Structure formats: C-alpha cells, structure tokens
Amino acid sequence: MRSTTKSAGKFEEDRLAIQQELEHRLGKNVSAGELADKIARLLKLLGRKAGTVESVARYLAKELAPWLTRKSYELQRLIKCQPEQLLTLADSALWDEVEQLGIPALVAQKKIRKRITTEQERIRRTKAAKNRYERFRRSHVTTPGSIELHFGEWPDSILLYPFEGLPPSGPCLDDVFHGDHIQMCNGTYSLQSLFGLRRKKLSAAGHGNRRGRKIVYDYHAVLCCMVALLKQTGQAAPWLPDGTRRRIVLAGILLRARQEATPEISDAFAKELGPYLN
Image (cartoon, rainbow, N blue to C red; front, side):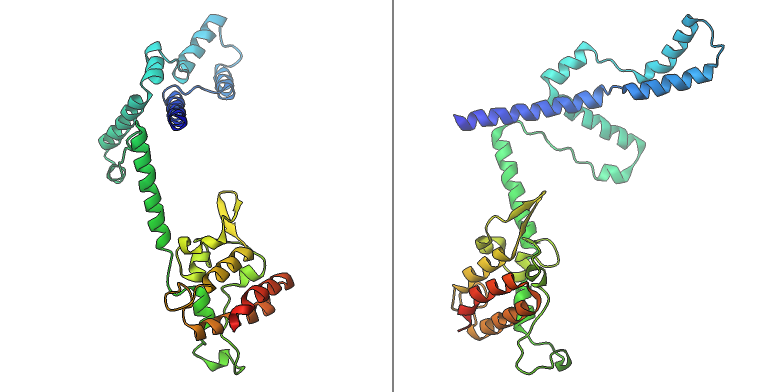
C-alpha cells in the first residue's frame, strides 16, 4: 500500500513538472523590467510632441501587443488535463519545423523520448539505466591496477633505481598519502584504477564522503580495501595472489608512505599492512 502511494505521488510530481514546462513554453510572460525598457524606448522615439493620450496609447498598444501573451481557456484546459500528450505534440511540431528548415545535422539527432505513463515502465527504464551505468564503470577497469604496476615491477633502467635492494615505487598513492581524496572511477588515480578491480570488489571502502554531487574516499577507505583484499590468499585471490609479489608491493607501499605521507597516515599504513609482510 505504501509503495502504491509513493508511486502515485511520484506520478503527480512528474505531471506537475510537465505542466510547468508547458506553461513556460506555451505562455511565456514578459517581465516587468523588459516591458518597462520597451515602453521607454518607444516613448523616446515619439519625442516630446507625441500627440494626444489616445494616439500614444494606440501606438504603444500596436507595438507591445506581439510581446504580450494571454492563454486561452482551451489552452489552459489542455495543459491541466492532457499535459503529456500536449508536450509530445509540441516536441513533434518543433522537429517538423527543423525538418522543413532543412537542417540535416539536427534531424539526424532527432530523438523524442517517450513519456513514462506506468510504474512498470519506470522500473524498466531505471533498471536499464543502472545497467548502462555499470557497463560504463566497468570500462574504466584495467588489470593489473596501478598499485601492482608501480610497486610490483622494477623500472627498466637501473639509473632510475640506483640503490640495490630498494623495492619498486611509483606516484599512484601520493594523493592518498598527502591526505587528499579520490573517487571510485574518475580521475588520474581512482579506487578502481589503483586496484584494477570493479567497484563491487571494493565494497570494503564503504560509502565514502559526499562532496557536492561526487562521492570521494580518503586513506581510510584505501586501507580498508587493502586489508580486506589481503585477507584473501591463494591463487583465487582477486588482488596480489602471488605471495612473493605481494611482499614486494607492500614493502614498496610502506617505503613510499614513509617518504611522502604525513606521520599519521604513514603510521596507519605501517600498522595495517605490516602484519602482511611476513
């Protein structure tokens, strides 16, 4: 019962939004400021000897009539009772005019979205949108991730790594070490690109922190993902399944943390990752 009431309320909200859009498109009113400026310009054109009050009134009425709108009762009734059909008709008329003007680039992009009229259609579209979103997010995942690439492989040139026995390193975690936030998939280094895993495998990061329309993650989230993944061992482990490579990567991370991170963040990485070096 509650779900039905919620669906009915959502349908009424959508209907009201359509009505407001039609009110704006089909009966756009002139603002008081625009009208005042127009009258001032017309009076200046008439000059000081404009004539009688009646002649001035007729002149202003003739010039201002195209600017003023008045919705007929029939139009108001259509907006109130048949807003979905009227909006579809208005969109179709707009594209018919575009086709008559012969603008092929716009005609080729013509796509009139069908209005949602049932709850089943809303559910279907929501599910399809989520699937498209998931496919888009998956396209950002490359394996192996930046952490494994930067901390698991020595550079080709020994000149870049002159100290014998020093583990490989890279800048992919520097933003995290400096206390900055990263996103799940966007940006140069994101959670997905760092680990080379889909977001469902990184659920240990939690819900993150909202900044406007973005969800961001700090070093706590990165550490939570590392610990959760390190607990999974063996060849079936999703991240760093090889024991030797795992120890090399963790040693490089801890060394980089001592070099780049704040004391608080460096200590947190040492405390959480240290036990997995053995």
